[in-house]
Image (cartoon, rainbow, N blue to C red; front, side):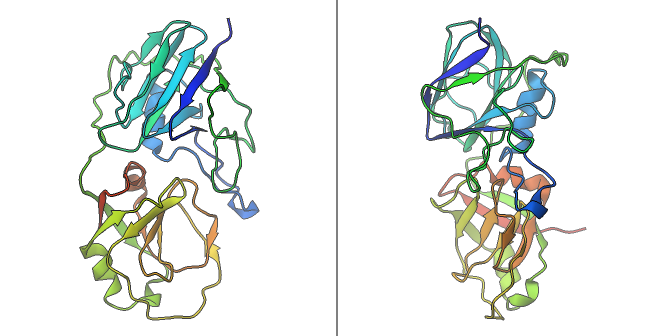
Length: 283
């Protein structure tokens, strides 16, 4: 009996993700990996996988699968109707089907299976980088996803008491960036005092935000420099862009701040139309 999951419907966007490709930025290769790292890591822990096992990242539900063998599965992140395994691992039998509905809050759900999604790695990772086009193709109907094996002991946890992603306004901590001198004295108080809205142009690369414009003090060109997850970059429009998992390795617009790393995962769960507030980090 083949250990695999057959994709009946992929939903709006489903990709394979793990912890990404760290340490390759000098070669022009971004890290990528799960957008909500904490939820992906929890999925692996609950089914007894090693931390680098690959999971499925499901955007706005819609994923339908058929188990081709008896498997242990779990979902984390955004809670999807139809999942009997949300933060509570369950065994599915060969032939069983799992369908994830539209979550009431949050954007991304993670489906972990004991043994991990065992597609071939690319540059040491099974993550799909939608910006660079690296890694396995975006999951499509008819795909048969092989499942590996794991020797890690099961944690013996029936359910993990993790709160669902919030549906309302989210506040994250913001550290000053390296290019504050490219903005007027009003820009930082504006950024940390206003409410921004996530636009429909957002994806795994980053969140495009709508809200008060941040005035520039300098209008010249900035040479491209390194970018990291959580960077808040300001293009000529004056409205910020927050980079996520598949953000570029370099960028040529000034970075006014960085979302604290512990808060970036929460940003990955924001939907278009949801409100985001930046609060200046202290201490």
